[in-house]
Length: 183
Image (cartoon, rainbow, N blue to C red; front, side, top):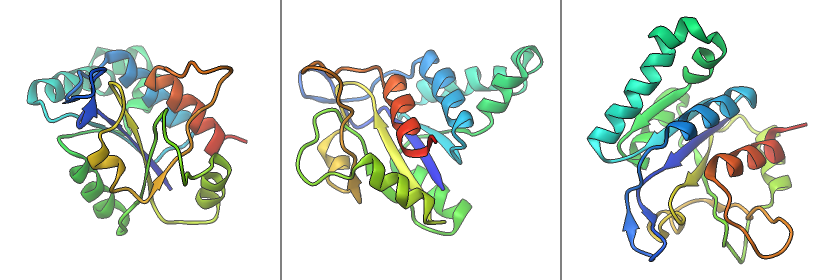
C-alpha cells in the first residue's frame, strides 16, 4: 500500500539553504489526479506555514464540497485522498493510525548516488507486501539531508537523455508512479 507526500519543508533553495516553498495550485490538482489514477492510498502535502495550509485547504474544499464538486466529479474523486499536514512526522503518525503499521520511507531526488533502490525493486516490494510505504517527493531544489538521511530507502533518480535533470515535481511523480505501479 503506497502513500505519497509532497514536501515543502525542509527543502533546499537553489543557493543550498533550507527553506519552505509555497504550495502550487497545479501541483495539488495534477498530483491528486495521478494518485487517484494509480490507486495511491493517500496524498499528503506538508507545509509548516499556516497560511499556506489554509490556502491549500480552501482549494481542496472547493473541489470536494463547493461549486467544483458538482462541476467536476472526476476532480472531486481525486481530491478525496489529499491530506494537509504541518510536518512529515504528522504524515507518518497519520499512516500509522490508518494502517496500524509504521510505513517504510522512500525519498526521491534527482542527484542521488550510491546504494539506491531501483524502480523495479520498489515495484516488487509493493506487489509482495501489505505493509505501507511512503514515497517522499520534494519541492524547491531537493529534499534536505536531515530528511534524506533518516529514511529507509533512497530511490534511484529519473534519467533522461543527456545531463539535464530538472523536472517539475508533478512530472517526476507521474513518471515514478508509472514505473512502480504501472503495468
